[in-house]
Length: 110
Image (tube, rainbow, N blue to C red):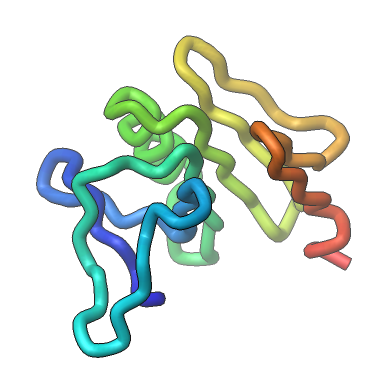
């Protein structure tokens, strides 16, 4: 699926959005590019040309708009930042968990 523009401000585009199963129905003739319904979580991956502070501020914007959790991943240092309402922290064990979703970031980093 293509990237999704969320109806937040002028339209924010997270790197990855996580929706409950069956929320988005694929239509191979008309791709969904804009969503009014917010995902339950989002992931941002910091690239070499991005400022970490800008990406963490974007995560805060996403949470303030109603997304439960945003994980910001910094691949070089293999650091996972978690942003929730009234809470920001670095995940020491690099395990991302939300509801029935578990991602072992260490396996992604290798």
